[in-house]
Image (cartoon, rainbow, N blue to C red):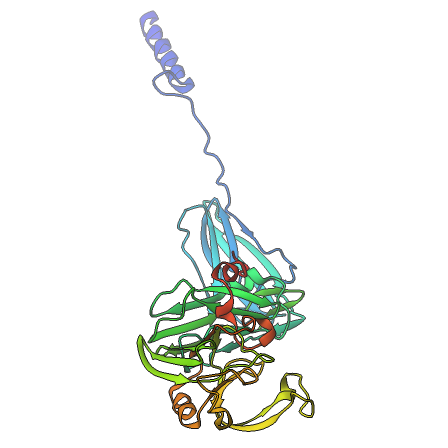
Length: 392
């Protein structure tokens, strides 16, 4: 009996040791409660003046994103897509298939699941910005137009642009022959694009003005995106030399005509520099009052002419002047225009297209500038042109 009792006691001690743990078995640890997932939305509930084009940011911690939905004020779903979480930080962006509307209410809802039984949900109602005014710019050349190698891209705004860098960054020019072109601002409402030298001939150019949802500043926003495409045709660059009284006409690199001509006389000298053809008129009345000289003044005139090729807005044309044929090739007697005989002017008229270049040189007059209107882009030194970019 004593021996049996000792055995039982030893067994009991062993059982107790097994229940209390040992170096071999370790202590009992209770299972921790599962942490729920959390969802955060970058756009706060009740937010206003939200950009209609900025993607909506969703962040998930402790779980996986299940769904993102956006509905309009009527509860209708807005089609869109969530980008992949490429860097694995739990933050994704939801982007609509088409941009959201201005001044409109929307509700963003995101759901995520973690180890907890219940999914996590976050909701935010917001309103997009309601602009004071919206602007769609005018763009030249026109869509589908063929122009000469001197035609810059010109963009005009009906309202002043305060944030020029924001707008310029959304004006994209692509060309079939790459160039080093840069935008340069002429004013708060006008910006031009050109390369450092004339466009390569036979180049196709597309201008994308991706301005919807762009804040111009002072309550002005872009109304819509706009795209135009044009072609650069043959290279026509003529050189009108006021000292030799001749105009050399080039088709590409080939000299095709050398015309005697008469440039602006001492009282009305022609402007030096590259002029860009902007308009062709088979018949035109030259009227001095259009640039500030009354018709009935000593230097005034109102004269019908033929084959008028406009070079700027300050009254300079290449045109037929049969009354000055005797001076053509010998003397400068015009009011700033390039005078040719009727036959030669007709030939040049047929040869020309908007965007062609006429470089006037050796005149006693000043260099073409903003005071002369129209296109004086190529008279601006390249370094100065580049400095006119808001992104410089």
